Structures are given as C-alpha cells and as structure tokens.
Image (cartoon, rainbow, N blue to C red):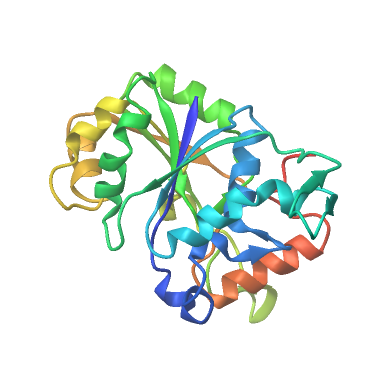
Length: 256
C-alpha cells in the first residue's frame, strides 16, 4: 500500500520559518516533520510514498536527493568528487515526488497524483504537518470493514489555552486538556479508495465539497483516535513538538 502526503502548502502561520522552507520540512529534533510522518507509516510496513509538492518543492527534492549523503558516514575525494558511502540509511523507502503546483488546492493536488495510486485498491493519505501515535494497520482494517470509499481519522486535539478545573472555588488542575468526545476534528490520516477521487470537481478543497459528497452518499467513515495527535500549525506547536522530542519520549515516536 502507498501513502500520499500533501506537502505543498504555504504555511503562512509560520512565515518566519516557511519563507525559505516548506512547512513539511520544518525540523523537529533535527529532522523534517515530513520524516517523522513517514516513520509513522513505515513502522506499520508502509514504505512507498507519494509526496505532493508545491511551494518551495525543490527543498523537498534536494532533501531526498541527498538523503543517503546526510544519513551515512562518507569519504569525499575532493579532486574527483567521488563519494564513498560506508553505511546505508536505515530508512529503506521509495519516494515519488510529484509537482502538484504552487497555490493548488488539496483537491487539485490529489487529482494530479491519481495516476500513481490508480492501481491500488486503497491508499493512505495525510497532511505534511501532523503526527500521531495512530495504529495505521487498525485504521486500514477499519476502512476495509466499513466498505466505504473514504475513511478519515477523527481526533480530540489539545485545547490551545489552559483550561482551569475548578472544585469548590479552587483550581485543581490547569493546562492543556483534550477536547471532549463531541469536540472531535478531522485529523487527516485517511484511507481512500481511488474512486473517492471521482468526487473532486474543479478547484475545490478536498475537505469541503468532496468529503461532503462522500458523507451524503454514506461513503465516508470516521476512525476515532483517542491517543496523541498534534499538528504543526503555529510557533507554539513547534515549540511543543520540540520539547516532546527533547524529552526522549515523544508520544508519536512509535518506531524503534
């Protein structure tokens, strides 16, 4: 099975970072968040990726072109330019990089990679800015059992502001807490049948008309994930992800 990752957006809320670096390439613990997302899939046996490029797509291309160089011990012969590799990256992935256009909608990006997934009975898809300790295998099994064209992952994100828990006038707890059950949002991590892409017409956002059409036809399921989920949307999110990584126990690190 393949995993499609949307990595072409501008990331305007992180403009200081994304002026020269697309949001999926913002480093967390020394590696792009895109690398972390791919590790999540690889931990469940999915190592064939299609990455949708857009704004600053060449930064992503350069990263994967030089992936072996950055992940290996090497000897460089300066006169000839020859490079000896003394080790191979532990990440054995197949990565197809597709230019889906600057300024394209998420729907347009999916249409432009259709040829790369048309032979699949189903494929995974997610955004290039969110991590989770999600069980991808269970998500795929859930999708197949539902017999629908599309499944999204419904998550309970952390609140952005501290919420006081009050008992008899005293604050008993204060901090970020998960949203209640009725506050779930679309956390990405989809499983889609190629036929789901038939619902994309024109320059639409995937999350609007196509998902609404699938829902109206009873062809959209929701896999409820109660574990960790976090997107990289703001500077605060970046600092939070960095702190979690530096703790040595990042919740999304499900690989060894």
